[in-house]
Image 1 (cartoon, one colour):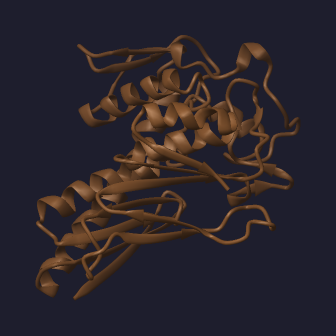
Image 2 (cartoon, one colour):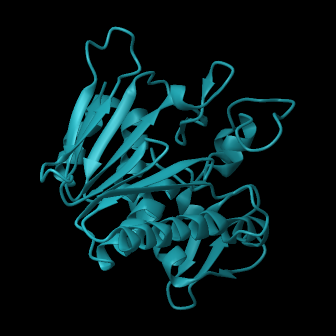
Length: 282
């Protein structure tokens, strides 16, 4: 028995395929996992004015903003990933996303930010004692689009594991994927990925079992000829036109690191291996 369920969140379709138990148990587990994804959408969305991230963006330049423990831990993790990727992954890109028309109305003067306005995770002060977030000044906005789907999948996967399912595959828009255990035939889940280039001879097939996959590509979302993956170091969209794929134990990390791989290119693959991940550009 393979039970399936889906929901729409974070601007995409999330799907769960789960097996290993009575149908009513599998359906209940899938619903609980999707409810967690929907909860995280409400917390992390940069578009919803009632979300925790929107509240941080409104207030943190003026005062420390206290956040719930899991969100604080996620932001701490984001700071560490920014350091590990030499700034190629950075959730302080909200202003940059707005400048290129990916968050709200297209601005009158679209283009790269000045050097002084480039995102800087060091401009975020995270107080672990008070569990607060504070910006160093105006002009900083968080945007967790490069890690939010993966983080939601990790949290949903934790729920499915607690429910004792035999195995599951969860994806968010096919660009963030988590596999729990084997497929119903006892084999790794097989994921086919087509490269962005027309001369890519065949899809890349990745086998997943108790691991995750993150995929980043400029062609996934465009404003005219401009792709949505930004290079926070330059204030411009990433130049890489291919597809970056990262496999690792965490979907959140795989999402963030695939973004960094798209920005940094092949030179980052060796670093990924040192971090316990695998990476490809196709």
